[in-house]
Image 1: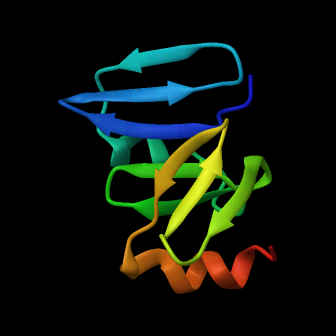
Image 2: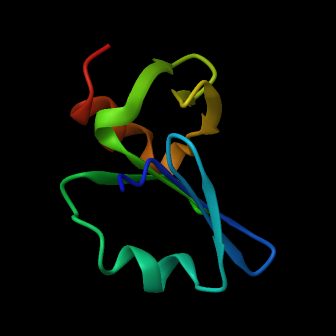
Amino acid sequence: MIFILLNHKKKYLLIHTKSVVYKHRLTIKEFTEVLPKLLFIKTHRAFFVNIKKIESFDKSNNVLKVLSKNIPVSKTYRNEIVSLIKF
């Protein structure tokens, strides 16, 4: 199983894969402590994405496209994302 997107909403962690969304009662911090640091990047306080699954980056609107979904990129993490991906 490849985790593509982690999203923390209302006390639940939503783990998106290509075909299934899993819902767990964990904090995003607890879960991300076991993720490979070089494979996932934080884009916003509630989002982590698999770097290899990023489809595009709209720099003007600070939005990543992952699984055909728009993922917000906060100003805090923007420079790190720009340095890691080349679009």
